[in-house]
Image 1 (cartoon, rainbow, N blue to C red):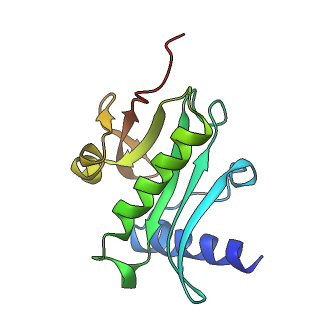
Image 2 (cartoon, rainbow, N blue to C red):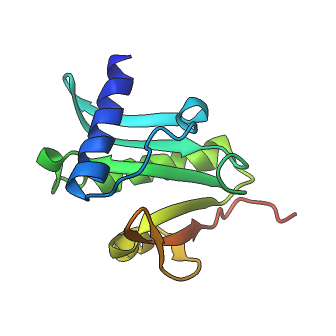
Length: 141
């Protein structure tokens, strides 16, 4: 319960307060997610959730990717996403990975192998893009 509280608090602190986006964060998907977190002692530095194919999208997804303000500039976000990619490709090898990325982070995700899939759209008052990482080991249907 302490780890869940820390994750929800960090998500609220960054997505709702810092980015002034009003939305309901607990969306029911956390119950089916694999949660990846970076801790230093009892302090949560970075967090993301990995979702299986068919839960939010046809593909597996990474989401709620967040780095604590005090921990930024240490490449934790890059390492976190790399680990999420590795997890999803190993856990769901027949699936690509789709993300709903904040539009200003497009180049960041491009550098990690994601390609933009569609145009900019508004999600909770913030410009977003759908991006996909094609799984090179996936067997086409």
